[in-house]
Amino acid sequence: MEHETGPESIDGIRSRYRDGGLLPSRYVADTLDLLDRWEPRIGAFLTVARDRALAEAASADRLIETRGHEAWRERPLLGMPVSVKDLTATEGIRTTRGSLLHRATVPDKDAPAVARLRAAGAIVIGKTNTSEGGWSAAGNNRLQGPTRNPWNPSLTSGGSSAGAAASIAAGIGVAATGTDGAGSIRIPAAFCGVVGFKPTRGRVPYVPHSPDGLSHLGPLTRTVADAALLTEVMSGYDPRDPQSFGVPAGSPARDLDACADRLPPLRIGWIASLGEPAPAPELVRRVRRAVAALEARGHVVEEIAPPFEDPYSCLETILAAAEAAAHGPDPDRVAPLLDPGRLRVIEYGLGLGAAELARAYERRGVLRGQALTLMEHYDLLAMPTVAVPPFAAELHEPPVRVDKGGLSWLGWVPEAYVFNLTGQPAVTVPAGLSDTGLPLGLQLVGGLGEDRRVLAAAHQLEQTNPWHHWYAELAKRCQEEETR
Image (tube, rainbow, N blue to C red; front, top):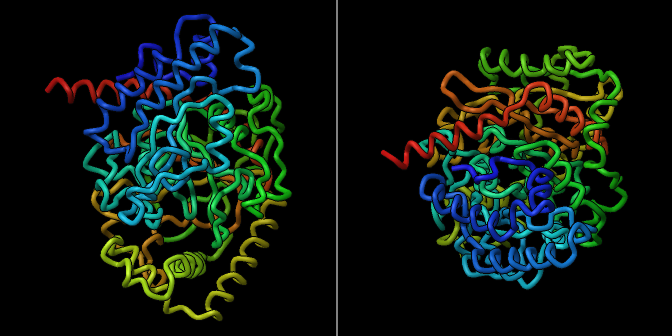
């Protein structure tokens, strides 16, 4: 199921374009063929922009033919097929937000991140599946049903950037964009065995502005270098997202190899669990073994107890209040078109008082202070990305319920949502396979603005303990399914 060129990085594909061994039109056509072959198994896409993508690829061919190597000046992603999560606006391409309410919506303007990808030469091949409005950490909606995990299609890919993670694991495009308000990039990346990066909040502008102050926009890729490049392209201030003001832009991608090689010894805090549900001991052991690759590079890893009280009730209050505000005082008007689970969140939010919301924001402020203090002692934190294995694709949460708040629909991912409340950069990288052959994720978390350090450490892990051979195995599985 792989392209003839294999599961290469952006740099590898660019080299083939430059030496004439591969044309963008061929690579994009192969990508769309791969999409067609995988889609019946995984349901990753809500909309495919086939004709537009092929036309843009042909334009990239002509640009390379006429300008040669100069074609890449200011266009580091020239001819690269990417996908965009369907919560993010794309000019001329349907943007449904996974909802029956928006099933025919076609924006007339790109979100800033998408506009920057296009300006860098990327080709948007389609919009990937998400839970409705991104309300749950799965990929189910009433438009097309669930996105399934390429490693086992009976199981969820995680979410809400469900189609993004599943498609990248399957090799459909070089990168996908995701959004992350409570783990929605990192959870599916861990379940599907890809890299998922949540930058410091505001580094990549989130438009329309997220009033809950929890949402990040970032990439899902097969390599850390590709995640760094996508982040760099999408980064920078935009007045439509006030949180993007004053965030150090830096250069997450510049000389990543050299940055990783020159990384000084770091003090890393290893946290086996941040709350219930606690990960299985075997999961903890396997992920901890992956961290040993950093110790082998000279970093000091110190096991620490959970440094925070579980802030789930704070998160739930803020998210439910934002959902209620977005749908007005009378959700019954649109209730027939809403996912029943999301409707319960809205109704719960309508029952909250201003004092409860104020207390939640106050608690978030305390948590952020605790995190800042912790990062004065540690350069990075390391932990399992998700404590539970993938569950049935039709569900929005694991069958074993975790009661933490009024609804608890996201209570099963404490290692993820804590760092939405703090705004810190966090990356998940593949850390091995479980006994059942499913990917495990290792999460690295840095201090605010320390995106480059997080990515450099992840790059060291990739160099020491590579995972890229997994994708050939995944392609082989799909070929075997096709021949049965």
